[in-house]
Length: 118
Image (cartoon, rainbow, N blue to C red):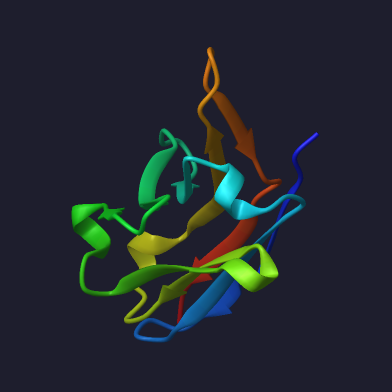
């Protein structure tokens, strides 16, 4: 059973920064992609950023230029550096890993709360 453990969430003022971490229980090279999703109250879960094996990245338009996803292969960890945070970034952030099998396997962490407020 794949385990993804997020950390690094918290309360930050507008304009501030946070770095989220997602530690995987397996070698992250075993996954086709890893990413971060978020879900605000009353809204659907949405993709924030993802990275595929080989290094290609994708970002939501709302976070381009402010957020950066990056892997640490030695630690089997994926980070999300979030800068210039805005109240609209407030949400529960979930780590995701996809393994390509006959039926793709999607794995999720338990989520970490990010609150941007003055």
